[in-house]
Structures are given as C-alpha cells and as structure tokens.
Amino acid sequence: MIYGITLVLLSIIAVPSLVLSKKPNAKELLEKIEPYQGWIGLVFCIWGVWGLITGILNLGWLTKAPIWWITLMTGSFVEAVLGFMLGFGLMNKLFLGKNPDALEKAAQLREKIAPKQGKIGILGIIVGIWMIVASFLFTIA
Image (cartoon, rainbow, N blue to C red):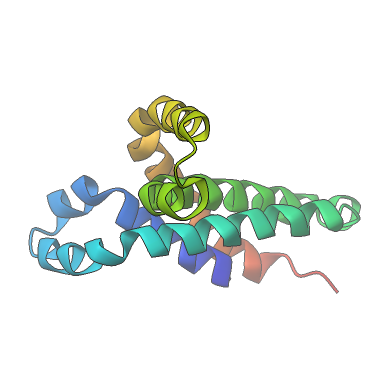
C-alpha cells in the first residue's frame, strides 16, 4: 500500500498542470516543493528500481499472485521513470559530473521521455490507486 500512496504523490508532483487545473490554490504548495524536486526524484527513482529488483528476486509470486506481481512491477517501473524525470538535474550533477559523453546520453534519454511525462504521471496516479486497492485484495502469505 505504501508503494501506491507514494506513487500517487509522486505522480501529482510530476503533473502539476493537471493538479493546477483542478485546484488553483495548489500552486503555492507545488512552489514550496520545487526546491526539493531533485531529491524527491532521486529517492523515488531508487525506490522504483528497488521495487523492480524485489519483483525479479520474487519471481515465485508470479505463480502465487500474478496480478500483484504485475502490479508491483508496473508501479515500480512508473515510479522509477517519474523519479528519473524529476531528479534528472540533480542526478546529472551528482553522478555524471563533468563526463560530457554521459551527460549527452542522459540528455538524449530525457528528451525522448520528457514529452510523455504528463501521460506517465496520469498512469502513475491510476497504477498507484490500483496498488492501494490491490494491497487489500491480494495478500501474499
């Protein structure tokens, strides 16, 4: 359930135009979060990758609870992608430093997925809500 809740929150941060169209007063809150956006993105990217690793290490769940396993993998993937999108600038500064080839490859990857950030954010909200519901429906003993 925690994955679902955090995915919904991350998706809301990733799709500010959607939030602002529904609640105009949310602009102040989003402006307060903006300075921390890189760190939030970095943490969620790592958490999403960890979720993918967990899913791979627990392939046995695929036979016991296939819907939950697919849900975990999908949610973790969306979380990792949105985290990468939000934390891109900070990750470049921390990890790539002054390596121009790596910076260029990272920028090309971001350019490919940047136009899809809104759609990925909406998908994240949907998958996050489903993860919350699925956590009540499917338990792994």
